[in-house]
Image (cartoon, rainbow, N blue to C red):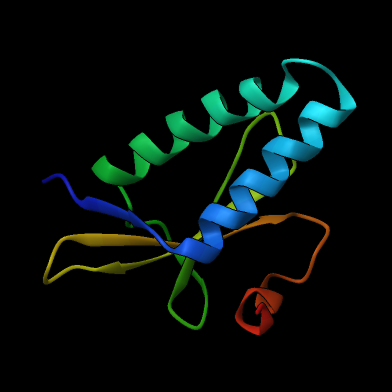
Length: 99
């Protein structure tokens, strides 16, 4: 069963900030990050039922970048909501404190 993927506006901001950061580090690196992230997001549409890490939030680590996608799943409506994209060195609970 495929799920519907929705990305929270704050997570969109996280993603854009990360792409911009990588582009500043090296030309084309932001695009490589975006391609890798999109592959992982497609995975969530097909198999989002990873174990819960904290407060009903599940996490999917990116393989080649030190980031995790933080998301929730509503099984009844087949909805996956990406809540945040956080660097693995940061406390994942801080996504709730963002403005």
